[in-house]
Length: 100
Ligand SMILES: [Cu+2]
Image 1: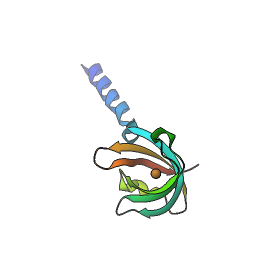
Image 2: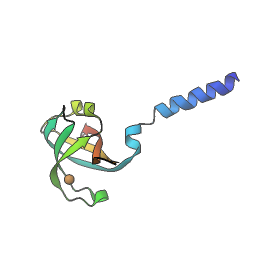
Image 3: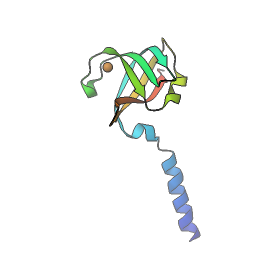
């Protein structure tokens, strides 16, 4: 009984470390930030082509899944981002980070 409980706790702990925000990514991209609307959860990016979506390079607004992710980036910065598909909002940024 004790051992089983320990296994269950270990399994739950393991699941917690799988980054849920990356699980449903359908594409990733790179680009440069033109504008950040942290309150609105929108970021304008001039991005490179995204072959997975057959998108050419362009400048566009993206919604972010989590507004807090915009605290890590700023205007003029080169970034890498992941996109997931939201049933209501279409392609939204699931994660965004300064390019290394
Ligand atoms: Cu685009």
